[in-house]
Length: 207
Image (cartoon, one colour):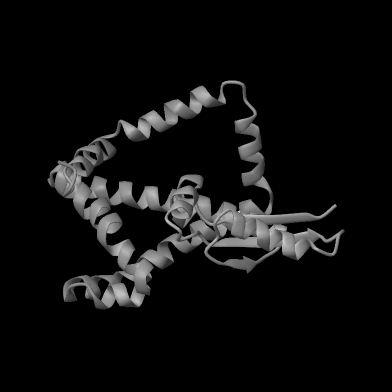
């Protein structure tokens, strides 16, 4: 049989929302075995069917390595960790929860990331204040150099199968859901994300 893969680059909720909006979400695709001679056509059709904006080719192995690294890196772990670090430093230095959250999360998610999405990082830099530009250009290097060893360690563990095995082991536990709910509750009940709940409710158009 054909062994094929179409992997949307985002969460299921984002995939569905963008599908309904007619925008699509980019996907990778791979063909491990073409038994019918029609594997590529079927893969492309599958990608289009789930709402892909465009499709780029990969392999099964590269998809696993890049996806696990991305989830644990910039897309999830690094983003959450960097946000917590900056929020905590601001709070430690006397800034209010609202100020710390707005400077850490709200400006990123409601403004800057959208500028990056529209035209790229350089365009976002060019459309910020001069102080923001200088700060970004001067501090980009130190942040990159600080986290590069973490990413190298992460990729090595992904390639060694340790990250996949950890997911298999933890997800197989009978009380996994209860443990997961407790971990998520710890995040959601933290001051930072309780503040976020209040801030989101105060966005224009919410009242």
